[in-house]
Amino acid sequence: MGGDVQPSSVSRPLSTSALSTVTRSSGFVGESQEQSIKNKKKKDEIRGCKPREMPLKQPGSNQQSLEVVVSVLSPCSQVLYEDCRMVAVSAPYVAGFLAFREVPFLVEALQRLEQQKPELKPQVLLVDGNGLLHPRGFGVACHLGVLTGLPCIGVAKNLLQVDGLVKDELHKEQIRSLRRGGDSFPLTGSSGGVLGMALRSYDKSSKPLYVSVGHRVCLETALRLVKSCCRYRVPEPIRQADIRSREYIRQQLCSPLEVTSSGPERKKEAELDD
Image (tube, rainbow, N blue to C red; front, side, top):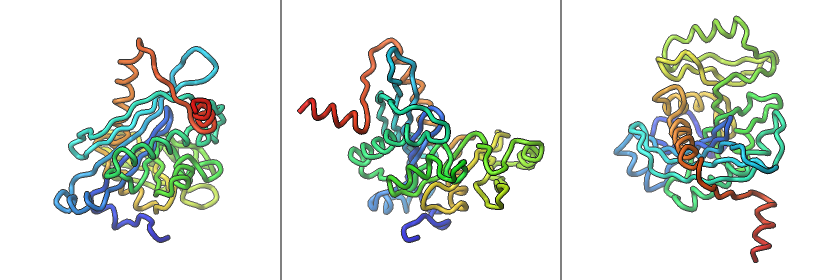
């Protein structure tokens, strides 16, 4: 497919971003034309950004979430950009359909990033969740990629047991066979298809990540890109946003939090304001 991310493209510096909710994160990888020229002199640098949403328990019927956007320069992990805000989540929780609850906020976070920092426009989204590794073969990484038109990769911390994939003794033995950071094995379902890869991302972590294709990226590239973003077990943009979201909550627990809505509700509010 024209414009898709191919394996050779990850050998040059990329700008990485990640979006997330309480159980999944998404991220982007990209660079502007101007930055691409500069990056020829900085081949070991990766710039990243990650929005995060974390549900908070508040009085009332609507659930509130914290949304955080962080831009990170890797490998030095310098934070270049940060955006924190509360959002009101009105869609119900339905297992397997979380994209309908979470993705609208992630799309808006990406739009704000592109408006405020166009030089950080992403090439690839990293999502704390699954892509093809999903009961219907279309997880949040696929959903977000289709809506944004950007290449997207699913990066899950736990195995989603679908198509015969289970955490049985065979799976545990395969995990033990991952001796060092960068080692991986395919996640082959009962249907015979490879749904993703289990990756030991860090020498000192025995718990793998589960990488799957979301949109417009091949599995080989997805694996190499995720591995290149890991200083520790979790890809650095996702890790940095997680750290800052917890700090934001710690600082704001005793303060009133401004909450914004999304989609039709936000449009209705705008009409009332007019």
